[in-house]
Amino acid sequence: MSPPCHWRRPVLKFGTSTLTAGAEGLSLARLADLVEQVAALRAAGVQPIIVSSGAVAAGRQRLGGAHALPRGRKDLPFKQVMAAIGQSRLMHLYDQIFEFHGITSAQVLLTRSDIDERQRYLNARDTLLELCERGVVPIVNENDAVSSDELKVGDNDTLSALVAGLVDADLLVLVSDIPGLYTADPAVDAGARLLPEVEAITSQVEAYAGGSRSGLGIGGMWTKLAAARLATAGGTEVRIVDGGEPNVVRRVLAGEQLGTRFLARTDPVEARKRWILSGLGGAGRLTVDEGARRALLERGASLLPAGILDVAGDFERGDPVEITGHDGSRVGRGIANYHSRDVRTIAGKHSSEIEPALGFSYGDYVIHRNNLICHAAEAGARHA
Image 1 (cartoon, helix red, strand yellow):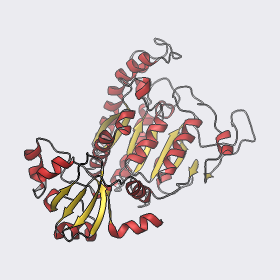
Image 2 (cartoon, rainbow, N blue to C red):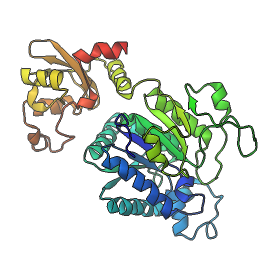
Image 3 (tube, rainbow, N blue to C red):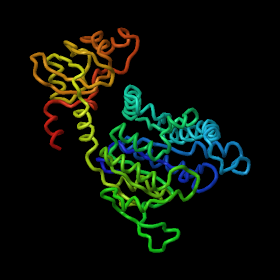
């Protein structure tokens, strides 16, 4: 069963109740089943990214479970201790099972400041995209062992929506212990109806949200709705599905209607184009040679330092810059991957000379094609 080609980069959030299969500790059978499905997607050319809960549950399991440790304790230091113990165990299991399928996985720990601060946002985005390009499956979690309350995202539903926006994901699948959004709590209301599709998250839809059924995780339906609102606004379609459903991830990506579908409000690529356009304040300008101009306009290439003739203005890494040709013609605009002083140092040089010249490197390009809108695409982005 192969997923349709238009699902290019899905984010898959696995909740604690899914990874434990309703028990006290991690379910190896459930974890192996989910990894097998993700491995099949990777083999089909899809670039899946996992946002995984379960570290605290793994920590409890490692220290003797709920009989040795009080399940009701939820203070931050206690959870940080459990996360510190459980995170390595969780990743070890992921790594072993993915290795069985011939796939490399990578751990990526994030905090809210990694997403809120411009340079750390770019670093996180570059890392995740590079891992995907190299065929690696990133496994993302909040850095619970060191995050303070004010730095925490708070729950992995929200984190998964932020990651979806970070990497321009086209689909976010929230794999939980419930089949989707109901009009009422099906445990107490026999007339509760599963909503197969939600066009917009209205006050009526919000009224359907209830609490977490299992009590093992943080997020209930309310956090899932908040994540869906955030992700769909950025162009990512969202599904809420039951992790206990056989082969659920592959079936969803193959086009089967399962759970509740939340329609995206725009295309993720168009959403990013609008963000780049709206964020430009004329911080600087790069003049490029004819070869670079043609590569950008005709091939959709990234801007390399070798093609830069001149640097105007002062800008930080992550600032918007204009790109013009040697004759003054407008080429496009994008997000700089280096500070203006660094671009002046490496302008005209080969990418292999970046690190020797600067003493560090953020990559081979001054502006990556994912952060670039060329002049021919601007009109479409403005009127999309």
